[in-house]
Image 1 (cartoon, one colour):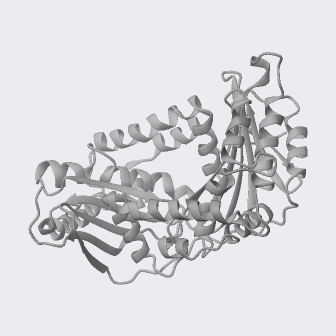
Image 2 (cartoon, helix red, strand yellow; image 1 turned 45 degrees about the horizontal axis):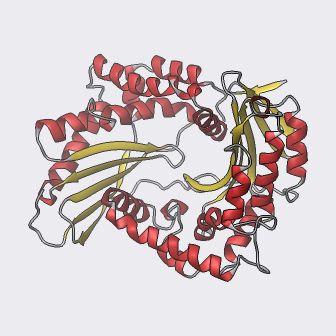
Image 3 (tube, rainbow, N blue to C red; image 1 turned 45 degrees about the vertical axis):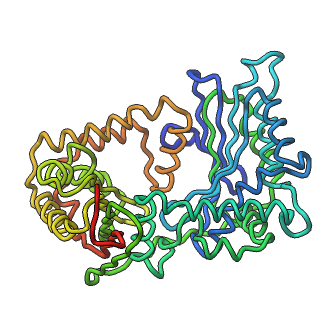
Length: 427
């Protein structure tokens, strides 16, 4: 039998299936993941989960759907949409206590999957789209949620920085599609997005926990109840050649400025990313990191500062909360610390701490079904057949010269500063 990242592996028609029996759990989780390129349909896709949970042909209201879930002893079936680099993923999840641990031993797997099939394949529709009143309410709620993003200045600044740095690329599209796109949606658009996901989505089915012995047969019958798939390939992320640094200043009625620097790594194989993640962790991965100690603790130039990577797109972002007057100095210090790391000017203890932070997270992955499925999905996208313990060992074995070399070719694409409308700031 084939295997991948510690899971059994098989194919049901065109859909790859990964599953793992784990006797430690009395529950199971099954997730169907469908990937499509991130594009102008993002707003319709992002609205889809909320609409699907408003009822099905069998349970034509949200309350009826919730009552059906309650009958499953706390089991649930839910859809969600997320952004992974320049792709959009619809994840449909069923989660429940396994039937053998319940009175009379109900077939929880089939019951949960039947509910999930109704949500995905037989939603409550009115003709070619969702009911007008339901659609209008959820569209309004989504628009209000996007408007409220400005209240979280760090999230808002990061979205703005990515939109500007990646203008013209799919990466510039926010997970929710953006307010203008939400406001012009028609009630038929999310239904088209649903059909597109189910038919053209690049699929992966995953399951873990207290699984039935006939899982593959059960899954085969469930997939046969969905539309016949005709999956389309997902293109690689857009690669931009180095260009001169660009900068944007936006002013608003705020007190604390937000600085976001967007760097790009040159294209590299998947084997480069453990060292690149360690490079980013050394730079801005927490209180142990260079930027926190140098910029915040030593020089008191920022209230907060951290680095993060998006390996799907190949980005490194530095985000800081600071006074506007400190922005240029902080940018210069970021460049200086990057140069130090590229030259290998860091202590062995620094690298050990950076590794420990990543490895400790990996050691906890197997304690949660949801975390292990997420980990395995990421390895599937990378094409890396590796379990959490093996992944931790990879990080443990990365040598200092490899970490230094991981920063080679890193270049600054865009600097975004969200600053007060008045030049006078208060803390």
